[in-house]
Length: 155
Ligand code: ATP
Ligand code: MG
Picture 1: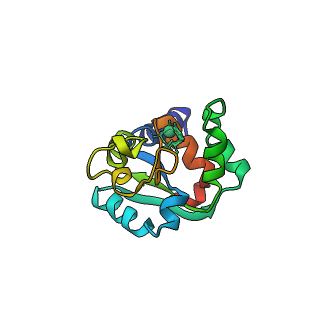
Picture 2: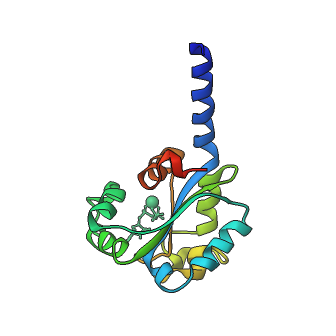
């Protein structure tokens, strides 16, 4: 295999990751309320394909690591406590322009500001307990997907 071929393969995979995939978590509030099935149905109906999925529970340490970007924010402690309070469902989703399309599907961080029909409008209780996570960039989608899934677990 020549170096040129390797580079082309790498570039293609990078391109695929950058544009077609996002990462999501159904948060502890939505899981506890029994909304997992309804939310997954909503996601699939919007044309997202599930390419990896698991039910798990985050330790406070892991939740803190996942949301480390918010370490200095006043709500960080509350966020870590909430995200480690119960089971979550983590998944990698595939669709064209996945990150932006999924952020539109889930709606604004605060459900009070979320558009009608969005997942947060339908299932979230508050800005802190807002039912679902969606990656905010292609780069973070790749990082977050790899936080939960090994290459072996991604279809
Ligand atoms: P997520 O990253 O979970 O998809 P987001 O990108 O819409 O949410 P961020 O600004 O990244 O919003 O905030 C991460 C999470 O921190 C929010 O989803 C919410 O659970 C929590 N959070 C954000 N702002 C507040 C706040 N003002 N008070 C309490 N919790 C908050
Ligand atoms: Mg975010």
